[in-house]
Picture 1: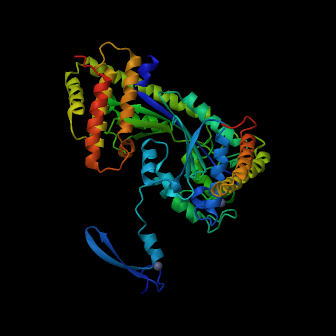
Picture 2: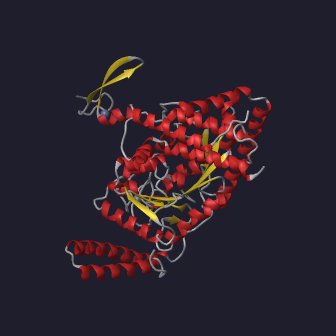
Picture 3: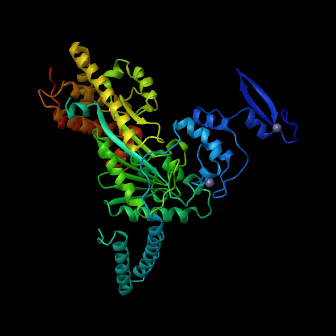
Length: 163
Length: 352
Ligand SMILES: [Zn+2]
Ligand SMILES: [Zn+2]
């Protein structure tokens, strides 16, 4: 069936209520969605939709402007760099100002991050091994693992010991 | 105006900070990732490990939590409804006294909130900022010189700070005056929402006031705006209460005592009626209709007890108390009995 809007040959039959009457329209799915957008009361989403944008994906997470227009959410931190130009009108509208004031993250997190992440993942592996040791009633091994876990706990809480 | 007089209007304070890890996709996107659960589990373990230094937290991994427990936590405002939309990757850390809750992988990787009774935005901010400091020590956050802390939704950029104060406004809402305040508050960049009932403020007469703008204002500025606005609303409510008291209030007293009568004698009680009647009682306590000559402090405590009763009598909380799931009929009967006993125990003497 031919779409009454774009003329492509993939139309479907949609039945709608208009002013109390049932009307049937022949449209392809994308034209249908464009002509009869799902009713949303969300002013913000409607506003975002108006901003437009090119069909481009964020190189870090693959999110697109279309996705942002649909959900009002970006995909990752890098989206703000990738789509900055397109996002700015929205940001200016919802926030008024566009220059951050106030708190900033503490320095040095980068260096500690890998260390802490290593500990946390090690902890996970050890817990799994402890479970197995306990299942097999290997008390000596379990005890050694518990000691190791305690050591990691101490390191994570900055050497103040466990709680 | 004494602090207690303030507390009979500004019931509770809640501050929330939104933060994200720099290198992970935001939760909405993370959900589509084939390694979502692995990455989510690492995020959860990292935050749990960091928070251990602060307090004792209960960890709820939403994928492993029953619907009943999720409803229980939602009713206690420890998690949001949206958290369950990301069930497979989401978690919550709740401190023992329930004052701190950290949602993981809701709309943002981290939503840390501090809740307290009464009105103290500074204290609440200090606490939640402390949580932020601890995590920030070893987790690189998504941050941009210009846009501040980066969040999934542009409405939270900058400080990621949402400061909310719960207001009990029986006098203003009974006189239909809340509507007049709204445009003024909106102009200050604040929003007001009715509580315990989508938009319909009638239930319980509670309103939450919070900042809309998060970018371009420092935390200090945001708190100051909310604080000033709350002070004005509190004054307005107190004046209206005083007017109602001055205008005799026999009808109002009658209505409030009737609610007390119903609550201490009924055999079936649903959620909506409880909210309405408890609001009557709280108003009565605030106006001094109950406690012969008792000081303000006692009144604030009473009102807090009545609030706690409201939370304890939400459906999932009732089921938790009873240790079984029950239908509405069973809950209504239980609620009636429980509330009646609790109120008699409070010895709310009428002050005719
Ligand atoms: Zn078409
Ligand atoms: Zn992205």
